[in-house]
Image 1 (cartoon, rainbow, N blue to C red):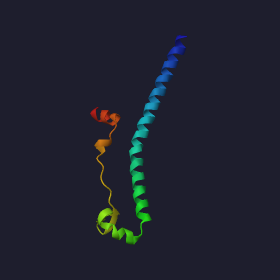
Image 2: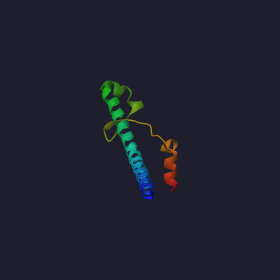
Image 3: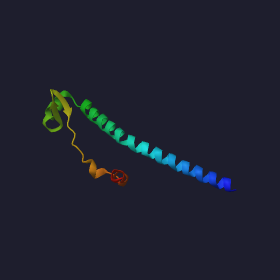
Image 4: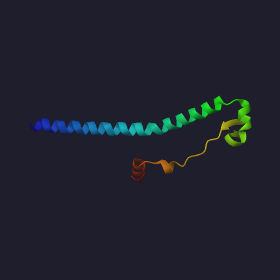
Length: 92
């Protein structure tokens, strides 16, 4: 009976550890995926506009860097969007 209780506790502990590790992996890759999706949206917007539309709205949405035109994206302050978990991770 004691063996069954100890094995059950160990297996539950292992399950909790595996779930925590999986959560950490997903959390790490989520930010990378967010940046990838943001780039895909910018590319989609850029591709859907004709060259003449891009030139008309150049002063508002487009920036020129070394002769190349890029869609200008407003920078976001990531500090405003941090979860409590991320704040705790930084404090540790």
